[in-house]
Image (cartoon, rainbow, N blue to C red):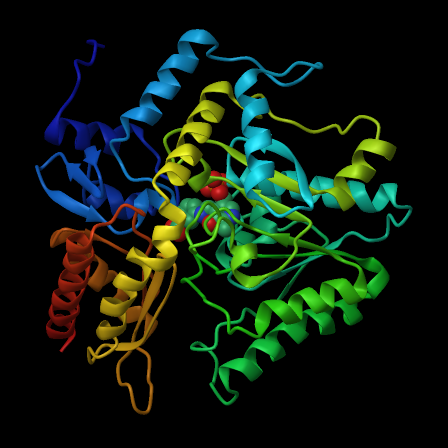
Length: 455
Ligand code: PXG
């Protein structure tokens, strides 16, 4: 076969169709269409091979928090690759970037966190959590504490353990459910029958954890895991009563609390971590995505002293780790990324500047006839598309209204995700006022187009 000379345009689409199996994709369907090839990016914009400029309202996949085109991050990666492109942290070795990053993470996290275990992704981080949780209870002389409670519609990753923690039934059906994981109701007030007030609903859904603990047996439950705000499940912002009640329950039953910070961490909610936003005190914080703003893959787990002290003092060797646990270039990128967030006060900007600014426009979208609810915290937002508002009636799922809306959006220069009929957004923290206005204007226009298309 002839060597492939840097393919472009439709050649790329053809090669993609022939050779590339995409994640979370119906390949047969994609083969009948063509994939959109993203070729470059700058600031909050991505550019495709047809020359379109598109505002990336999703920060890639909820990760490019510092925005595209950051030369400082690229330079940090290049410098590290020249100095030491790879070495591992196995066999009693370490390298400067993994050490420096570990110390930095301790500084920006709650006081109980003094140690980090590195991984290559959010999924690997959550596999690490499962191993460490179960190991902890073994070492505590309570090996029967195996069960981890999670929630329906949660997303914790795609490896077998992470998919099991997640509450996505289609993933469980494709070989992804290990024993010892239980799922309870998510705090999704809008999706409920709304017979309770949001505050009552928050308490009730938290108490479903307590019911599950009592059903399984309090001495058999190891931990509870939750995303502060469920991201991939549709930006489910829980009522304010939810997390304090979850914390009370974890404390009362002595079970470990895992706050999955893969999306919420590194400023997305206007605090360094979602746990800070809700005032919980977790024992584990798996993270990934925003730690490097996606410039290179990196994940990890912050482990509280309560757990880490036991793993260290009583545990001997922890038979767990990855080739790329604390990859030097990824760590160098994370360090520079965190410095940028600090130097440019971007977490504060999400909390008190661009976050509230975008929310003002977002709230106006609730006036659109198609929008049953507009919710946003930090730079995490959702729009619920509905057939009628009063009484509230949702569309038949099969109609695919969310997908129709998403396609209008991207064809009009704005990326948002459709989770069923819930449109979600998570733009980069550097979004300007003008770009925020552009998001709102395009969203309104595409809601109009969607309404016309389904009439
Ligand atoms: N936890 C959470 C809360 C996540 O959102 C993971 C763990 C797994 O991370 P990795 O790095 O293994 O992918 C995630 C990932 C989507 C989408 O379409 C969301 C994620 C990944 C891919 C797609 O919303 N979240």
